[in-house]
Amino acid sequence: MAPTPGILALVGGGEWQDGCSFDQEFLAASGSDQVLVLPTAAAYEHPERLVVRAGEWFGPLGAHVEGLMVLSRADAEDGGAAEVMRGATMIYVSGSSPMHIRSVLKHSKVWDALVEAWSHGAVVVGSSGAAMALTDPMVDARGGGLTIGLGLLTGLAVVPHFGDAHEDEHGEKLHRSVQLAPAGTPVAGIPERTALIRDPSGPWRSSGVGEVAVFLDGVRAESGLGALPT
Image (cartoon, rainbow, N blue to C red):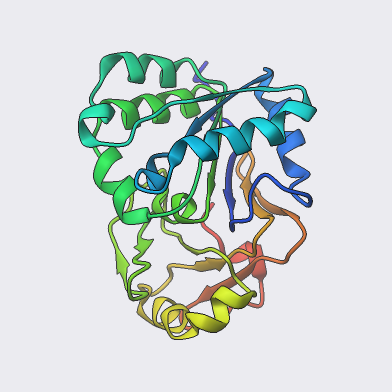
């Protein structure tokens, strides 16, 4: 029997704080009390602080957090790091620069190990810029156009921080992403402290404090999550 992939969740940012009750569910689904945090996207923004924050959040949930400090391309080709990734049961890819995480991880040993772990049941969570990078196409945060992503999910693009001050500031970029998406390719706007979740059996759902918006062919899709790829 072929292995079943784990839960895949895309969080709109604002991770590891009140409102992110879905993390308890993800932890339970992983069948373990271990969380592996991959802070690659924040390589130039004190990534070690993200690991500490994650530990402060998951500790009261009964979990132990380990940081995998894959910050450069050389790190991503390290066999030891790939083995750690391959053995993970819950992988949390924290946010910041989607362009950096893509350049570091794409076609690397660590990325291949992440895909293998997920395909064998590990829970994978990506937040903010990491959520953007996990899809293909990927929204280019610099201008809102679409480019190549890591492709753990295909046929879908993500705009995090949807519906807050970030949207007001970058509304033109959001509009450009929606308009430039290929025909039939949905763009999901995910608010902070909100997760867009794909269960192992395939259906989509959301959890958290906000409402996920789905845009298709230039307009907001009336079918909502039903417009997402199966």
